[in-house]
Length: 453
Ligand SMILES: [Zn+2]
Ligand SMILES: [Zn+2]
Image 1 (cartoon, rainbow, N blue to C red):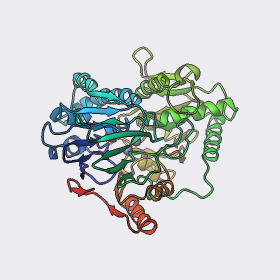
Image 2 (cartoon, helix red, strand yellow; image 1 turned 180 degrees about the horizontal axis):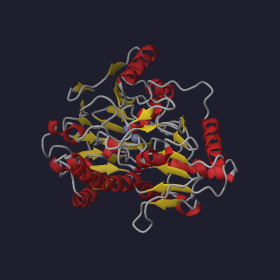
Image 3 (cartoon, rainbow, N blue to C red; image 1 turned 90 degrees about the horizontal axis):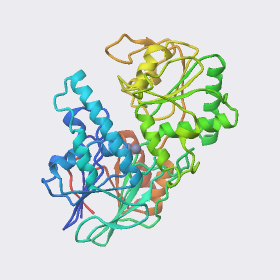
């Protein structure tokens, strides 16, 4: 059996991998690179013969795992697409939004190949979806030569890792995984059985967590910081990804209010895509494996949702909490506009990061700036001085490197393929695996290279 990375860039980006047996071909994930544009953002689908794959597996609904699925299906219309019900709903909402984003980039940035797909293609895509539950094995090809089992990956609603069994071998692809409980999401439940090959994410390989870190301690520090901003009549801007991080932050704010860590009447705003995604989270509140079962954000929290057709734009006033996308504060998004139009330059306000921001993104630039520095948020406008209180809190949706290394040690793979991480992160894992499991072959798959499993 052959494993191939179809990723164009080695770091966190457009994830896509091929597993090929003597009779079947399976693609795992079909991501879009969040930093690159056009063809550069698409995996190497040209390495697949047209009409040649049996099926595709989508591990979760983040852009870097599902963003180019419609592009893959253009040359692979016969492919069946396996995913969880939660991922199906979230992915469709994300991809419809992505069409809109690409349409505006076509106009604003002159990228003529955008949009890469249209809304109507997503109706066809939907018909290829085959929804599967966790821990229920299913066949990936018509002959039944390759079987898959989804495992809860604890990363976001609906996220899975997957075991593939074929030709007497076991392969496990982690997707994005978190082994710890978050505020809403419960930690991953992965099998302990040994595997022949492990394809493992390495996102946090370059990050050492403070020894005294606890999730609850970090949440309480976050609550304390928010309450101080509100006490001085400022507002708090929390840039968040629409899927996962928004709902984690809302679950925290709910606790803070209930326990009177922040004033109960503080208005909380979410906007646009986050509202749509939160609605989908609410649809699964009774059935998904999570904390706060049955709790509906949109009905039980009295959220203020802006950006809708009948509600108008979100007003920026004092004494409010704004959990707005995008998480990296990309140009032309609500979080970027808010920072540029009042938050950043006013020392009363707080700008609190709760997740990953690429160093080259506007969010990343703010995080690296010192108080008083001018920060470029959007090339179309002048830079803005950083005068507000800026803090970074650690609520990552990815496992610590130690927890992932412990898991690797447990399943003792003959081959470990290191993916989804930048150079230093991958090197930490390489060293750790060589130390703990000297017989394991560590492979950093280069695009298109065929590796025998
Ligand atoms: Zn993810
Ligand atoms: Zn990812």
